[in-house]
Image (cartoon, rainbow, N blue to C red):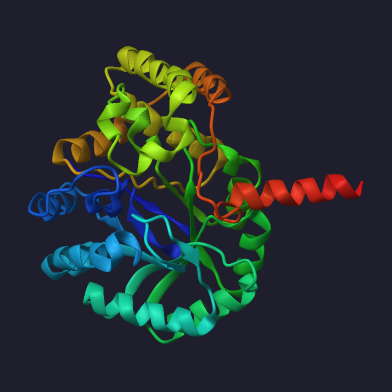
Length: 344
C-alpha cells in the first residue's frame, strides 16, 4: 500500500493521511506500551509519514515515543508537534500559555524530547487570548529563522486570528476539529484558510471514535476521557447514532467502513473548497491504520455527500465541554457574533 502526498501551505509536503499519535497515550483507553511503537512504525511503512504529537500528550511522553520512530528514519517522516498548553489532559487542568519567552522555552524542550535538530511543523496548540496573536507568531517566526522549525501552524484559531497571524509569517496549516459531526469551522475558518492558501489538518476526523460505529455501548469507553463529553452521554449519545447509521449505510453501498466514509466526506469537501486537507486519525491498532489509509480510494457521490451533510445538522452536544470558554475557535467566534448583534 502506498499513500499519496498533499502540499499544505508554505510548500509543506506531507502524506495525504496523517497519524494522530495522541491515541497512543491512553486518552481513549489503555495503550499497550509495547504495541505503540510498532503501530507507529507500521504507519510509516505503508506511507503514512505525517506524524502529529504535542508536548502536552501523556505529560511529554508522547513526544519521546515519537522520538523512537524518528531515530529509525528521520528523513522519511514529517513530524508536527505543538506548544501552548500547560497542565494535564488526564486531570483536565489544561490552560493556555502563549507568552514569547515560553515559546522559546517550549521549542527547546520539544527538540530535546524528540531528539531532532528541526521540527517540520510547529503549532500553537491553543490561544491565550490576552496575548496578541501577532506577538506569538512573531516569536514562532524567530524559531524558523533560527532553524529550529521549518513551518508554522495554528490550532483552534478564529478566521480573524488566522488572517492576522498569516500577515506576520506564512502559516502552513490550521489544525482544528472538523468532521461530519463537527462542522463549525466551515463557517469562517475553512474559507479563510482556502483563500490564503493555508492547509487544514482536521483532528478527531472520526469523532474520537464515535464515527467508526464501534462505540454502540457507553460502557466500552466508561473509563476514558470521552465519558465526560455531552455528545457521548445520555440522550445525545443515542440521537447521535443517526450519523453512524448514515455512514454505515453509505459504506454498504461502497463496500467501505463507516470510518472510511467519514474520511472520504472530508476529502469531498476538500475538493469542493479547493483546500488542502490532511486528516490525522489516531488509533492503537495496525489494522485500523490500514483501514484509514485505504480511505483515499473511497469516493462519495454528490448525493451521498448531501445525505451526510443533512444528518450532520442534527448532532446534539458541544464538540468540547472543557471549562475554558476560549478553548475552541467556535466559542470565540460565537462570542464575537453575539457581541456584534448586541451592538446593532
